[in-house]
Image 1 (cartoon, helix red, strand yellow):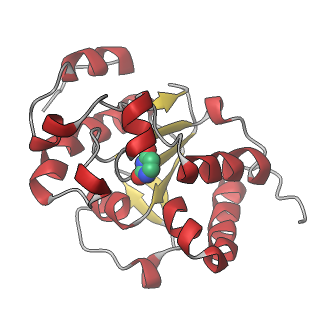
Image 2: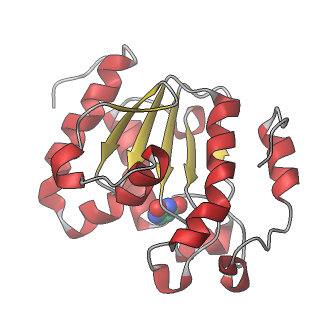
Length: 192
Ligand code: URA
């Protein structure tokens, strides 16, 4: 486990041309994460999809466009001022859910990113992010929209934007969860 890395750049260099798990076999780009190292809010997704693998950047496909809209139109922030990353840094084949051994290989790097940034709040997008950071089983239907924590940092689990693309009626619940994050950050919640 990388212990003494103090910057995101140093962590990225440490990860290098990674072959620690089998996801490296199918990837085009390792998607480390992007945004401000001084971000007070970090969004954590599951893993890169096709567009992210092609570009080497997180959340740039359809789900990413929706996340960007939530950040910019919903929260009134700029995407570059938050930090966005994933549990696994390489695309799983056919976008399957990352397997236990893949998560185990990559999770220390996500944890290190969060320890370096030390945000005031984390938003976990989807089940994989929530249960990986919590280190316990998690039920989205029962626990989304409730405050949990990762190493004393308040964390809000909510539905993944890809889920919202398939289930648009869940957008209202995500907006409620995002408003809780905004209140914690002292951001103004404007009327719709
Ligand atoms: N879905 C994710 O979980 N992460 C991305 O970066 C893109 C889509």
